[in-house]
Image 1 (cartoon, chains in turn purple, orange):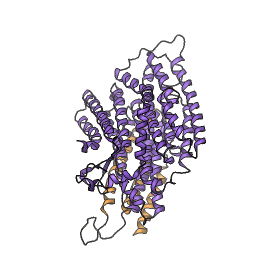
Image 2: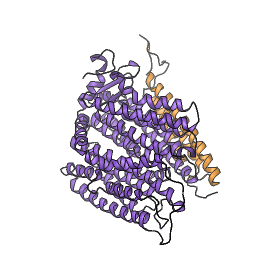
Image 3: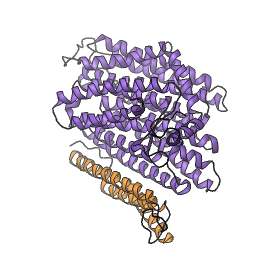
Image 4: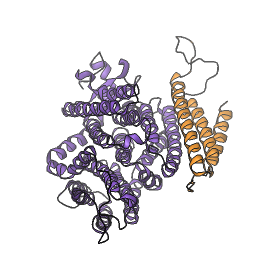
Length: 506
Length: 108
């Protein structure tokens, strides 16, 4: 059972999606989807516990050992990301089951395919396979983005699809170059071959730069980030909440490629350009948050802000910074998702005004105001919640790097701007309504929505309480990430150490 | 052979990029198709060009690298599906806004 553990997070969503396509009845699809995603949380949680022993587990698909076959690689980082994806998926699916899934066709199978793509992108150890999982994730996201209909979504969908198709073309060009130069696409084998003499180094560098550029497009680095805010704003609340983890796929892929393939041979590839662009992204996102006219747009800009903050880290190539980044990534993903879901609930209660920042009818449910306060405190990085802990860890570890003073200045200033924007927007949504206004007689909030929002909002305080074990785990994961030798050895020798090729014992 | 292939890739890419930058969805769609043709040719060439050599590894006989051909097949299938979806999305935008401009804003 343990030997087959790495494939389970991919099989569960795949089989669930196939099962859900058997019958188009919503209650059936809901029950199957929720049960399967809950199972996925358990399985990925177990995988994370399993991975915490420090062994890099390698699963050779079809028992074709690397570098000839495709491998799935589970280390602490990959396992933790799958767990985060599964938890987010479960809560978002719960929210969507309250009625959002009725607005269009095939929501549930597509949701499972999106999970499949996300999980596969975190688990795979092969660059071409990474492309395939990216495409699975994107194809599902194209359709989910258009879910619910309306011109705004279709329009956002067109630019999003075109942009990502061009990104896929670039990805393939990078892979072609890499294969032409190095003769392999397995990440561990790439790391091994690129250190050997006898290939065109400048072409290899070019291929890696193209690869990083594609990851930067997914993550939303500044010149490539103009698609992100309006796409996420146009998407339905649960879809946007799931999309909150999509930018993180690019960041984790970048961290992985940097640590395994680039750090030993061309450590200067990311220097000088990634950090300034990431800082520019942060400033851009903070100004966007200030200019946002609705809560959903504000949440989209906050996604971009956290992506920019995380993009500060790959160029530093240090395990302390990566550890802080991992904690920041977890808490910012959950906070952004909570913001999208909360904006959906608030929009339900304000009728025509929806989640726009203008005077409207008062909210019927008082807990929404408290949830907003907790969430805004988390997102702005104020104590005592997890946003503060994450930012503190990042800033402490980034103090000693070359660009440290600039990073401190930009992150702290933009933090202040975001705080001002959140305070102003909270006033509009919660306090500002006409004296005689009464709450609108709208339909109530489903218990599924309440549970999902409350659990995601509670992640802010909870992750702060659990900061010690989580940051210890992040530390171990980052140390493992920055020991590429073990990764390469585990993947390439999995066939020889253990003849059945499923589990490497290092 | 190399010159011919590189010229073909170059022409396809430049036409593709030019069309992607147009403001109507149909030329953009055509541009993406051309771009994916160029990328497929490029991937194909990444295994080196060989004449009269099948992609089958046999002892003593000359063969060409089969892996890029498998990669190209995957890329073709994925690109085809994406293009089909974009075509449907463009048609939906046309029916909703009455214009095939990529930034159509008019509500019906």
